[in-house]
Length: 478
Image 1 (cartoon, rainbow, N blue to C red):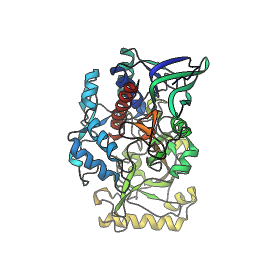
Image 2 (cartoon, helix red, strand yellow):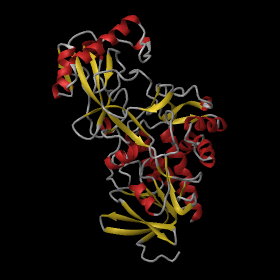
Image 3 (cartoon, rainbow, N blue to C red):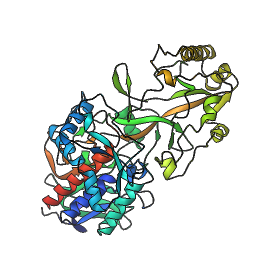
Image 4 (cartoon, rainbow, N blue to C red):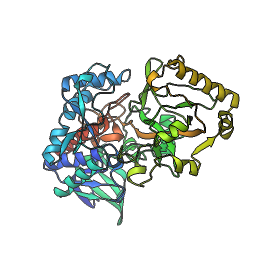
């Protein structure tokens, strides 16, 4: 290439140290390449969403049926055939690959034991979710991958953000980083793999692409779209930038949210700013989508209010404890805990209390008569065992009738964004003409395969699969 001025060179440079970046580095190393991983966070906070995720990957028992499943899940937003084919074959290899690396792989007995989208063609390929040691969360997958890199002598430089791709004649030949010694130019003979995560921690990108005005974070605050900007600067096309996963959340004392999981009782309803119900509150949240109006829709997209009573308050915590679901930045990194009886949240003012529904309405600025009528209609549906308005499951109709009454503001909890640089089945980033940009690869959340719906364990599986693909291909170029 003839590019002068590199401070050092490797066969492959990987940007990001989560599941995708680790898989890319391990894949390239296994192929005989010299590898460097650069990570913008310090060692205590590195790893992106992988570090605070459930850490599980779906078990693909039939790659041919998996193709059908992914196409069904994509619906009106099809994914290129070569990407579908690579995804179907590579995700089937994840567990075997991790076992070969030395992981204790076991099927999760409690979570994602069957597909969420049973009705879709190809769902029979889904055989549950594997995890490290059969346990969810607690950074188990990240810790294993971190150890696997160290055992193989693959260097990770923490506190070293990549700031710019280096090109020569349209070919990506390296990356410029900002480290303790200042700016350094690092050559990549085979290519650069971008595995920098999503953009959910970039408020401007969230507004521009996801149209979500107000949200809190479930995952890493480092997911600020760095890789997206670098890829766009060299001509990358983008795909499915409007797809994501939000769930019901509660704003805490900072930008991180608590997962609102109403698992302990059913004595609640949701109302919008007009004081009326607007959705089946008990609809299954299928990784960012609910079935509504006969189709799957992204949900939630805007804040609303949770109305509940003393029965719900005493049934247990409104947000899972670490022994139940050890997932999320709040639980794993800042160790923020929700109180078992919800009393701390009442004391903090997150949950507001009143002796009547009318008084509750006044606390949050809702019309009292409207909210009273809404609760009365909901309670009547509970008594009748039939929710004619929204079709809530009769077994999940719990009356809001025992004073005192409570209100909690619900804010979309953004788990991840899906869109990013468009890539092909070899994980090569492509430009706006559909032509691969030589020397540039993308994997993981920053360029997720999923254009619309997705099932449990799909994101980690995608990251591991295309991380390996990217690492191998870049090593071969070297």
